[in-house]
Length: 159
Image 1 (tube, rainbow, N blue to C red):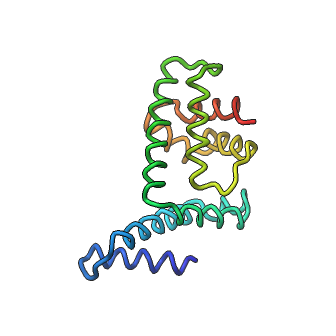
Image 2: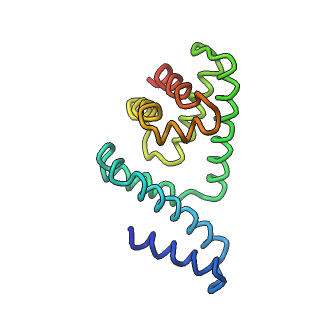
C-alpha cells in the first residue's frame, strides 16, 4: 500500500511539473492518497499501536472510497463544526443544544473515515485532542480553546 501511495504522489508530481496529463478522477484519487501518505508519515505507527493495523487500514480504505460529493459533505461538516464551536466558546454551556450539536457534527465528521463508531474510541480521541500538543495546536490554531471545548462536548455526550 505504501508503494501505491508513493507511486500516486510521484504521478502527481509529474502532473504538476507538466510532464503528464491526469483526468479529474486521477487528480481526486491522487489527492486522497496524498492525504493518507501525509497522515501515515505523521501518525502511522502511533495510530496502529493505539487502534490496531486492521482498523487503520479499514479507515484508510473508507477514505479512499469517498466520492467527490462525500468529500464535499465532509468538508462542509468540518466547516459547520468550527462555526458551532466558535459560537459555543462565546457561551460555553455543556448542557445546551449547541454543545450537543458540536458533538453530533464531530461524530458525523468522523463517520466519513471511521469504519465503525465507538463512543469509547470517540472519547479517547477527544482526550487526545487536549493531551497531544499536535492535535491541540491544530484545533486551537483556528480559535483558542477549541480542543478543550470539543473534548468537553465529546466526553459529555458520547455514550
